[in-house]
Length: 74
Image (cartoon, rainbow, N blue to C red; front, side, top):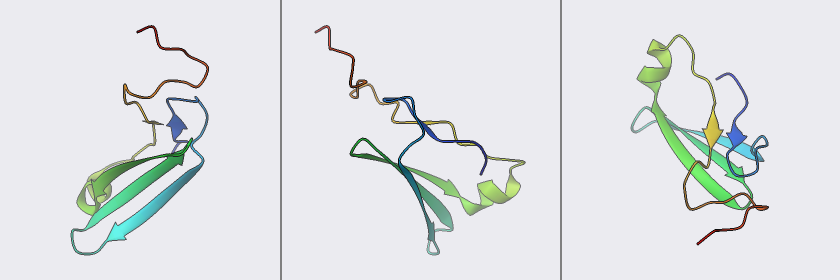
């Protein structure tokens, strides 16, 4: 894995990344922790082996989250 996983809410690197290997499904589970939230993504080991490279991008892109300094207009 390459790159830095950034948080879309606070625009900083996430506080912590946890990786769990699931031997039953041959998947790798990645959990990103930031500002009290957790986001999870799963990638199969086959995808990792077949890829030329996998890079971290952005976590917490969900619409329900706002940056702490932004106020809702609704």
